[in-house]
Image (cartoon, rainbow, N blue to C red; front, side):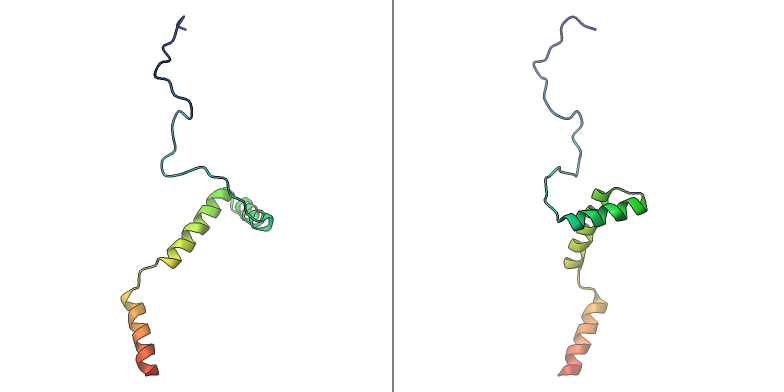
Length: 82
């Protein structure tokens, strides 16, 4: 060990900051949290990972692009109704 260390450029905090994830505090209903913990235990995965996947899936459903097949189906339904 050195007798003295230069700490002029030292920073507090984590040595490696995680990329692409942010730590937050969130309030969830007890029943929701319990359900995710049960599923996580049954699958052998983390409950936070399951919550993250569920939120990602919900966002993907709402932002899904309109495909040609979907557009054709809607047009057929509308033209048939007219």
